[in-house]
Length: 628
Image (cartoon, rainbow, N blue to C red; front, side):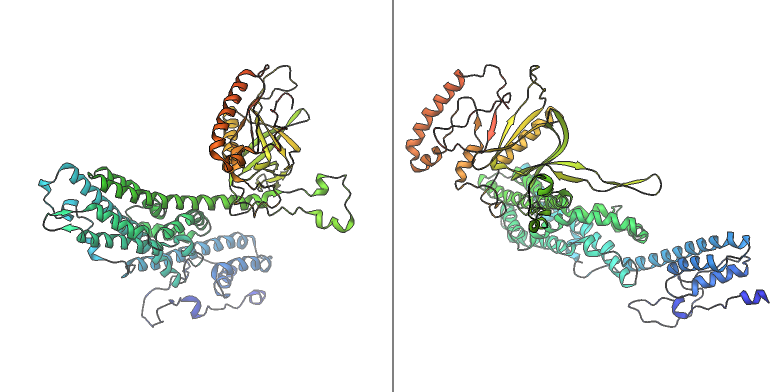
């Protein structure tokens, strides 16, 4: 009686749980031996009543099998608490076997859908028998000319032109269409059947269809223009007209370069997304394995196919230079050079866009990591009225870093000399300012011995230094009489627009190479600083009305005895002929004074300044590192 009371009524699964409806095919009654892939076949083993009840609960409780297995495991621990020890040891084994059988069933289901999709993955939009027939054709079969009568240079030029077309043909059929027909389209068809729904094809393949249409149009245009430039009477081809007309259509299309630009920009995010779905979804790796067995792949993995458009667009100038190399006429060479320059300009725009995106992503990371201390923390002695404490509890510049025109030029570790000792810091050099911070690593403990490290935080030490308000000095000194030995050191002096010294940073690099790298980046950033374009971003920075004056002062190196007059640039603009002769005399006198007034101790260092002198009678004095 007790045994009968403890029995649970077995609930048989519904018909909908044992079969799967195809998304596009209506359900039909078919006589078929066996069972569906979703049905689990239990091996012929001796199962106790409790284990049989556990099995029935797992497959008939409604919903997905894997989710129900977890709920059944939790319920079993309380329901069979009084069962014997033998039942306890066998129950986890049954659950494990059920999971393995379910995984195998899902795997068979994916294999079935992927194989069916690969068999019907042809697309009428890009299937072109005319282009496919030209894949095995050689250059002498393509160009209808008497090969024996051609000179060696003419043969090589035709071979180079044929290589341009044939490589594009291989790129279209062996890479782009393989990526589309073997990976992208089967993935979409599997998603229609209810598999791999977590994968986003648009994130993984980007604008692949647009690249395919551009490549196909390139091949079609080549064949059309080749027939137009063919001279029947002479049996010759005007290859220069062919190249010029072809790339005139290719590069000046409204969406050609922008399509490659969009693909190149998204390539990094595509590879990161590919790595994430490989880690999270085992079924996608199974999908990749099945697609790789397709003979059209020719052992090319998904990464090899995804990078193909980047490799192709960068190879075009190389193929054009090969054609230019075997061109005889100077006029034809000049026309091809213009085509090459146009392609290089397009590649530079693509490269600039990719670099801009990577730089912008880094700025976004820094904006979330940089901590700006409040004025209360920076100036604890300052009295702040109560009605302003809430408003001044945070800095207004927390969103300063992210700007479309700001660029991170260089970053790295430096040592800051303060109070006779050094402390580690982390510096950021942007194209408009210099920021000095201290790193703070945040780690948290996990259960066990493993640790997980959070992203670093950068605490700003001083206010940012605009590049148009700083003086940069080399400060190496190994003199034993000084208090400290300045090895691999340089000094940054922050001045206001009234030429008041606000702060001085004496920084040491780790090595001579590191110091030279910082100096080079500083000088490059100061020379390339474009304050007029950054006026809307740097509203609090003192700007000058004359860009030529700033550029002149930024490129001037301060030497002993050299006087800088800010009015010289204005005079030069008003009377350039008179100023040229006067400037020549001044430069000769300055060179003579610089030769006669050499420093006695040899420790005076060269400084690069962006701040012009305020008047003629008060020149900028030389900066002596010993005096500092």
